[in-house]
Structure formats: structure tokens, C-alpha cells
Amino acid sequence: MQYSSELIRTMRQALETVMASVPAHQSVFGLKAAVAECILKAAAHGQTSYDGLVASASDQIQTMISMLS
Image 1 (tube, helix red, strand yellow):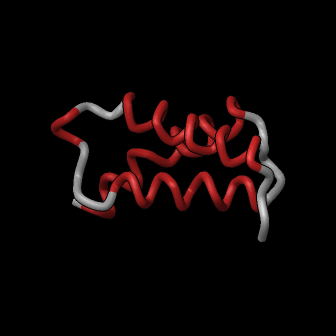
Image 2 (tube, rainbow, N blue to C red):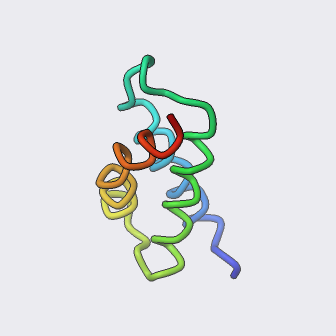
């Protein structure tokens, strides 16, 4: 799937926002990749707004941390 450069910037910004909200003691190995994958999946399903991408990843962050811990 190809994404516009604008959407790629939006996805990167969403990734950085979500990662900045994770406390250091919860930032487990592989978390950033898992969050990026979540954002990519949301975009593939039509979610293209910054707020929507952040919400999609934020809603699943604790599950991802649990799976990776």
C-alpha cells in the first residue's frame, strides 16, 4: 500500500506522540515497532487523521506493553 508523504508525516507525528506518553519504566523493547504497526493498520483501514491515529494506538498501548513484557 502506498501512502502520501503528508500521511506518512502524520503517522510519524502520531507515533512520536504516543511514545512520548509512555512512562520510561513501561517502554519495553519492541514497543515502538508495535505502536508503529498499530498506526499502519489503522491507516490501512482508512484512519488518516492525526487524532484518530493517536487514539487508535493509545487505546491499545497497555495491551501491547503487556504482550511485550
